[in-house]
Image (cartoon, rainbow, N blue to C red; front, side, top):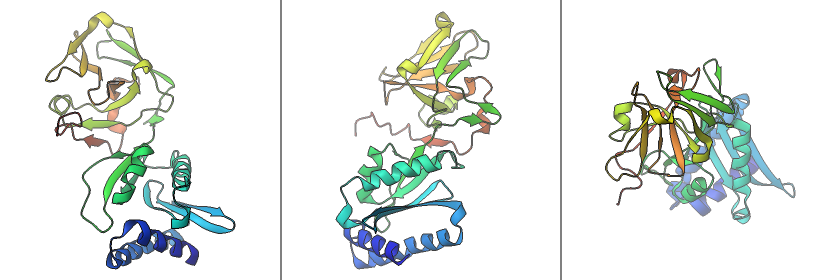
Length: 271
């Protein structure tokens, strides 16, 4: 433990803190997490990267969803050790996270690091020592309630006129709601797939297209029963969002902790 604490203190002073007061605050806060891990080792994932019998990097995930810290010794930074630690975290927590996700409050200097690894910022940063920017990495949901999500899963509108086939090898990826003007009226939880991973296998003629504002997003509804099935995203036109409630056997109310993205301040809007 002394070697781990020494590594963290050196990394905080070198890369995170702007003053010795900030460093002392952060090191004390991290030390509390380490104490928690020592008391409850079975409730966490703690990783060490060792080179030449010396600890070069450490990471701690509390309760398999809360990435409490991830540090690389200053002399070993820039060599991909942090990326390897996070990759191991994702592999180790994928089947164990009760939230089907990893959450982290990133320091300001690590924002780009987490973005490159596929983490999504979920809110504004807070003015705390070192910075505190919330990020989330969603695992695909392989099961919702008693329903297993199949690698190829069917989805349909209410009347059955429209049937989709989706490629979901990782399950339901990034389930979320959105606060934009249309999504808050629909209220649907949506997942994401590449365009090639969604096919209309029945009822293409029954689909009704709706567009508005920039006319970029393409929202599809069944013209018979009115159910929203999917849309081509404005924020990422290479993806479809699909209505999770349309998946065969899925009750969306069985999905816990669904996040809501800020669709009012849309990333594609001019600043």
